[in-house]
Length: 199
Image 1 (cartoon, rainbow, N blue to C red):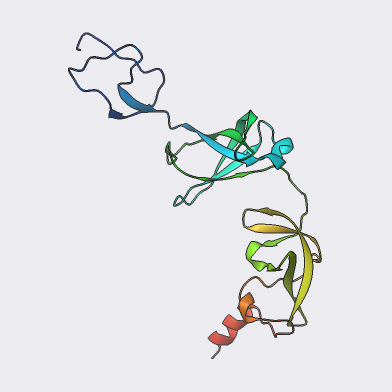
Image 2 (image 1 turned 120 degrees about the horizontal axis):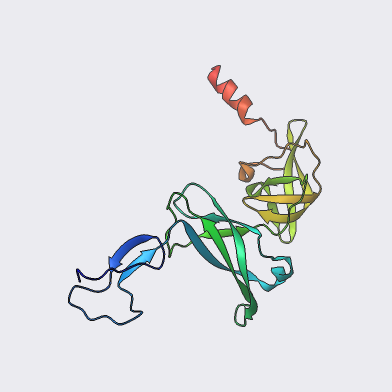
């Protein structure tokens, strides 16, 4: 053993070994777990209805619980064949991992950017009130809650696009929706905190 040098095929971090001193090994047999953590690969599946909007080089955002930060990568492979059971296509992306926090085998939530819309009106996802296939927002008008029907667009990263029914500058109620109804008096959170502090 002292007369031999074992060279890794790439630079990386050595993990657990899979052979012990005295074992016989053959050509190509793995001896230790070796991982290059500077760049990780992420695999995920995308429904077939989005296939025409996928392309190599698209940006993906990776979120992993409980890591607080998001990671960005780029798509490098789109499988030309669909999964016949799920009707989805396999997509692979490369994600830089400078702090080595991402580990092989982790589960993650992947967001892929398939379209950018300039000057879109969006509201937090939790602000919407859905009744069947109809959607509403509570708007503040003259310090009262007014329910307004809206048409929603794209859902992305905790927010939703509003196509119709909302104007720039409208004040939208995003919390306490279960406690209000049309015509209910509304005070902003800042006003309530000031009133409480003055007592």
